[in-house]
Length: 74
Image (cartoon, rainbow, N blue to C red; front, top):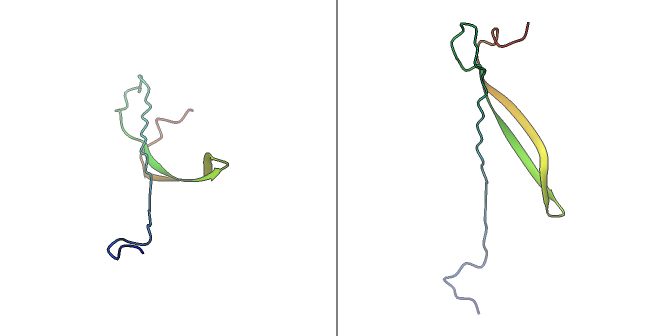
């Protein structure tokens, strides 16, 4: 007979979060001050098939968009 003080069920809710940041710049800005031009994030959903993890869905969001007029090729 189980001990009345011990739970008979167990629930685990896990949420693995991984953060990643990448900064790319160029050395010659042609007189334009170094400034951020875009900031964004991904919300990824994964699935597991036969023990292997893979992307199921990726949604991207741009949170901040700056002046890209000096960044684009002419």
